[in-house]
Image: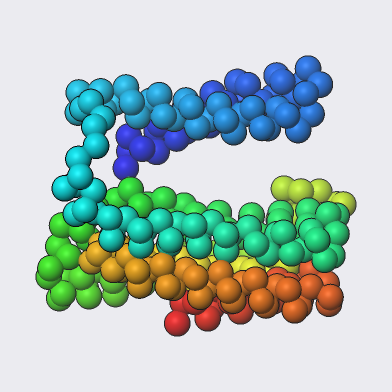
Length: 255
């Protein structure tokens, strides 16, 4: 996890601080961010390639290996596609049905609240998932690990939720500025479901570690459908209504 975190940090600093800021200063506008995101991916890939250079083998296709992993890989692919779609479908709906200005408010509020869950998700992917995979045949240890994961999620998420609910206005003024005060209400709404966002990652790690890729995919597809439908039907009532609807989808997906 330390190597992964350090590599991500180095790639981000090199691309955004070392590249995006100078390009923006030179007048490239939003293209500075586009170049930075692409550069970050290439830099991170280069770092991982260098670290794992002694373990790399020449790529070749093996039909037996393909048959062994085909079924599981399809489930993981479906889960990944559904998760990616669910992550951005509400933004598309807000932009199309409400407006791009409202999308800015909604997306900033969502981004600020998603950070704790994303950090925990990275920890799950880098550390927890590999450890659970090693003991996936021991149901007792998996159950204990899952319950401890929920407890840790509560210890991290509930105080964060309380803090953000109480100081959402101050957070917006400090991070975004006076012109973004309309984001206060969505932040309060999203902050109420931080625990469900983090706790869901615990369940996902367990299902993936036990090889239940299609169960994970079905969970993600249901979540995607909930986000899309609730966001669509709540969009005529404004950004705050969409925030309530998507928060409901997040809480429902946890249960």
